Image 1: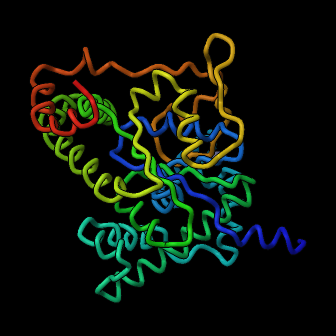
Image 2 (image 1 turned 135 degrees about the vertical axis):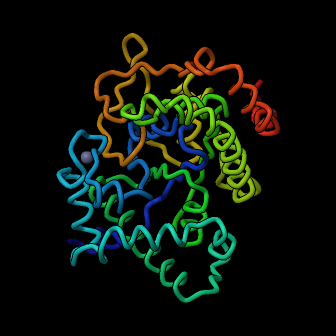
Image 3 (image 1 turned 30 degrees about the horizontal axis):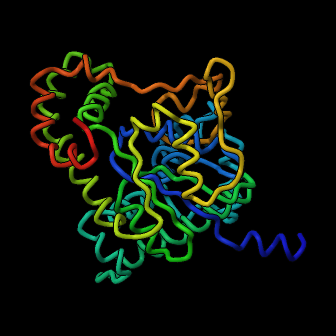
Length: 316
Ligand SMILES: [Zn+2]
């Protein structure tokens, strides 16, 4: 390897972190950004230890994680001596570090306990190794990590040596709640309705809290962009271009072809909705099922609990 290539490999790639609440349409944004030149979208990298190493779930390419050539090449490059211990234990330490109560300490890089400081060092080292290996294997200079959970993004920012851009993806709280209900395990069909009715309030409170936390952590800073799922789905080319410009990416922007379908290619994404595995031409359209499927009661409960956010983000 020549010296220029070596220098390039030691440089950290740019990271676009998609922040917000789950079920906000980040799979669509992942796919659109991942189809742009010079960009590699890896889905929710937060879950690599559990959904990847432990459960060997499907990658967006259709292979299982441990059989996916892309991920195995990334892992071999990132951890030439093997991963640093049992994946379940690493995941547990990471979850401990990313608890809400630690977020201010992580942000200030002033963790009071030795265990938490160790967990942060491990988080920092594994993220750096993974991002650099992803850039080297994919050839991309920009990585999209749609882990969404704000404390994860706060910890990424605390690494301090990445050009981190945060896209705050917002979706109507009632659509998010409906999407949460819809993803219930079909084998528990009989209980789905009951669970949902009980859970609507909790989803609403989470929606408000996670969006408020994302704004509190980033909105006053540069390198923050807010995007509504509904706007993205209504005009994907325009809003993808907007995000790419914000991220400083000047590669080709995905554009619709014949019949308005996008060719989104194949992305090696971890976690996300089943749309990540559709590999043919894709027609993008807003998912508005909630408008007819949500009961009056749930609509009322969620609207009543989240109205300050609905107003703020321009929902009626
Ligand atoms: Zn794959």
